[in-house]
Length: 262
Image (cartoon, rainbow, N blue to C red; front, top):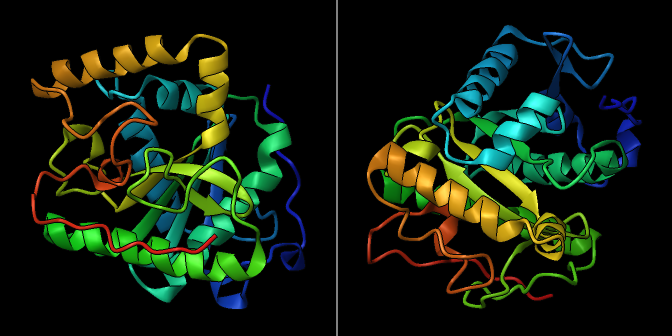
């Protein structure tokens, strides 16, 4: 059984501001209900709807990512809803805040299946290319804030062209997949713009225990079953340009605008 840690004081989180506190619902599922993990905060109807829809999407039998389904079944996940626009300064700070909170929650979330899902209220109807750049704008702005608060994670590279690239936030390395309703891949067609964030240490643990390859192959076969083809950008973690995997778009003119100095 997963233990839900009591909410910490706002001042405990370096990314926190009053605006972020008002905009973020940090949730999980327990005893058949959506739970807001800020005990004093009211769970809004919209936040509950987003949690229920996104959770139901991942729990669908045909969803391709087996570890994500396991985590949602066992309750070893967190889902944050950000009442803001992807690509904005608020979205960037809210992303960092939810990642920082998640890092605090790690002792109470059995590894290695423990994703953080972050859904943004808008925009919902944009082109895939615009979505791509809004995702990277959010990550860039978040990284610029994080750089002033935390050291760069030692287990990922800050160079998006590197095979070891990962997003560093709150002192930990992350691997991010992003999707929305216009995504080219069915397994990323979330109703709201959504990041699925996994710690680099999760992948390292799976590899050390010999489970990574089996799970990877299972995910790929499910992707083929769902859409008739593998995701061409779903390379193995640590192989090829990792930035392509964030939005998995096939547009050849796409570039990665991310820059961070560790």
